Structures are given as structure tokens and as C-alpha cells.
Image (cartoon, rainbow, N blue to C red; front, side):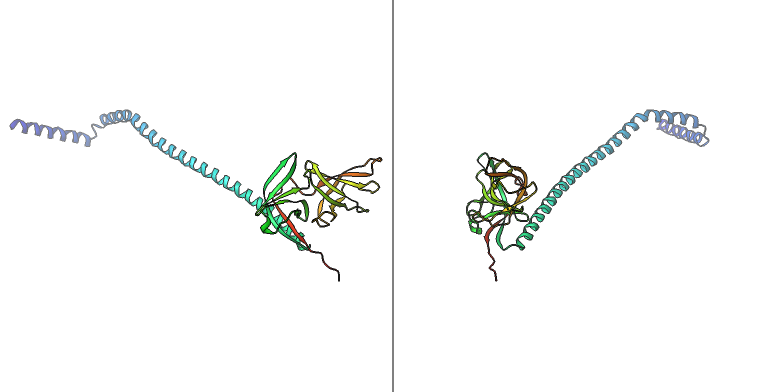
Length: 271
């Protein structure tokens, strides 16, 4: 018991002595040495901890960047879709405006239709529209776009759809008039790719490239005055009774999306 007390008091004396030396700054050089040693030995651990912290922040930044990139890509795709939709809407509105302007000045009963199919092969060129018998459409009804530009006529009618034979189809034949001095008449025939020809034009009549070609009114169901196109090339041979002309269709026959079908023509009585 006495020995334990001596040990306890010895420890207290040593502690007090050390504290006294610390207060008197006698131990400062030794403390600085130990402090430097501790800093040097702990430096790798501090660096590793800092590395882990930095890497965590970098990973967080990378994740945020990836999310931002994905968000930007999605926004870009959506903007692209919206731009295409807006362009299509503008084109559709422009087409409808032209058709409305045309029919407001002509005494035709008509119905609008959308193109839902197309067939192009060596035997014919046709489109399918989403209007049929229930909509009042009949065989041979003329089909127009824009400001009364003829693109074809009804070939076959079903209950809710119809097949339109385009003017460049092999079997298409439409009476036409050239708006020259003689008002030359002839027959518009297809079978020449996207173009058409006007045959049986009297040899002695003068036609020129750029002359406008319209329907003559001599084809069943097709009224006079619908625009077909313009003369592009005149083919004339002295030994033949008729001349021909290559006609450039005013309508883009390869990109038709909306049409109007003329279902009835009203003839205004004079007086």
C-alpha cells in the first residue's frame, strides 16, 4: 500500500514537473520536433483522405455533367421534332389556303382528302386517299391541289378510300388546251416518268416553251380551266400531221400529301 502511494506521488511530481517545464517553454524545442515528426508521418494519410474527398467531388461533377448532356440531347431531339412538326403544319396550312382561295372563286362542290398510300410501278402511278363512296366521291372525279392544279382523277372508289390515277400514269388521258393565240387543243398523256406529253396538237399552230396548259373541258367529269403545267419542249416534224409538247407539271407529283376532289361542277345560267 505504501509502495502504491509512493508511485502515485512520483507520477504526480513528474506530471507537475513536465507541466512546469512546458509553462516555462523549456520543452518547446522537443515539442516542435515531435510535432514535425507527427505531421510528416500523418501527411500520407491526410493526402489520401483529400484524394478520396476530391474523387468523390469529381465523380459527382461527372454524374451531373452526364445528366446535363442527356438532358441537352433530349431537348435537342424535342426541338428537332417540334421544328419538323411546325414546318409540316405551315406547309399544310399553305396548301389548304391555296385550295380555299381557288374554290372560293369557282362554283365547284368538293371535298378535302389526305394521301394515305402511293403506288409506283411500270404499269401505273396512283395514290390512295382517305375518302370514298360515303363521302360522295365517284369514279372519274378530278383531283386537284393548290390553286386548282390537276394531278389526276378517281380511278376506283371504295367505301372509305379511293385510288387516284395521276396524270403521269401510263393510262392517263386528259383533254387539254394551250393558252396560246390559237388556244391549241390536244391530249395530255402519261407514261413518261414524272413528266407528261401533250399529243395531237395541230401542226400549223404556234406553241412555245413557257405556254400554260389547262384542261379543255372535253374529258368526262373534268371542267375546263384546271391548270396542268407549262410547255417545256416542243417536238415538231414537217412530215407529221400533229406536233407534240413535253409538259412540266405545275404540281410536284412525287410529293402529294393533301388533295381536293371535285365532286360536282355547277354551271351558272346566264341571265
